[in-house]
Image (cartoon, rainbow, N blue to C red; front, side, top):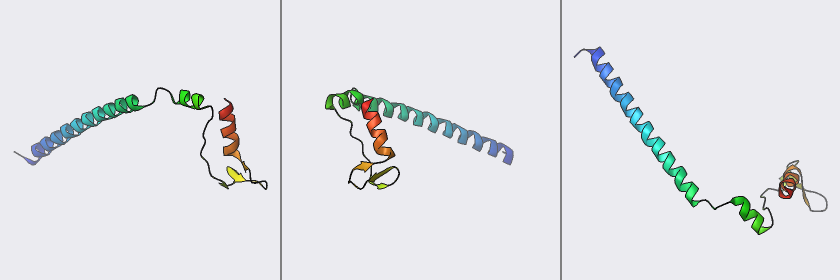
Length: 88
């Protein structure tokens, strides 16, 4: 067997290995997505609506996104957007 033939066989083996790994990874991804979909609640929107309020997490020290005004109230873009989203 010459060097060219050995290289060709090595490349074929490597490509077959990569193809197999790709198929296995794709199958694992599909299984993970199915499991996540089954474990997810029926509807996150339904949960929020049933609760009657939207809970938004933010900070208080990064103006203009979120900060406390002189009255100690949270204000800023994050707060405004949270209120807009909560109104629907």
